[in-house]
Image 1 (cartoon, rainbow, N blue to C red):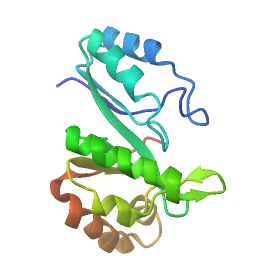
Image 2 (tube, one colour; image 1 turned 120 degrees about the vertical axis):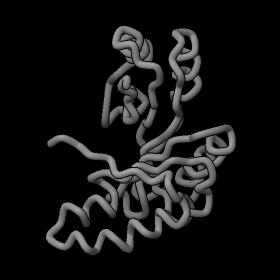
Image 3 (cartoon, rainbow, N blue to C red; image 1 turned 30 degrees about the vertical axis):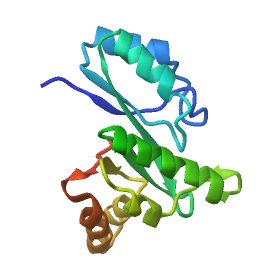
Amino acid sequence: MRFVHLGIHTEFSITESIVRIPDLVKAAVKDEMPALALTDLSNLHAAVKFYEACLKKGIKPVLGSVIRLNDAEHRATLLAMSNAGWRNLTEIVSRGFIEGQQLSIPCVQKEWILEQAEDLIVMLGQHSDVGKMLCSSNPQKAEPLLEAWIEKFGNRVYLALTRT
């Protein structure tokens, strides 16, 4: 089985990364990755540039974004599975910019994501509400939070593990 990276930030997430798309795609080709996911923080600014660069090199582009939730403290990664998922993702990200600004940071209400879950995959990691509860002294509190995600996303909910 070949590795596919599902959590890449680029220079369009300046507080998270300075990776440039041509260098990223070149490294993916060198490592013989069949696909690569772009998940810039709360934006889709690099999507077209990334998509075209991947296609030119024979890599399947996966488009997504790490979304800041509600209070800007929690996050969830959303990946589009199809054109319908891409439309839902663009609407969620846009809504964060239009309606969810908190101290100049676009934030998305969890309910907005749950309303537009069709053809999206969600990855919940250490910065998600579920992840924080799993890592706390009360991991049983994670179960009801996780159930809300599973109710809307079904088998498209993944827990992301991070080496620390």
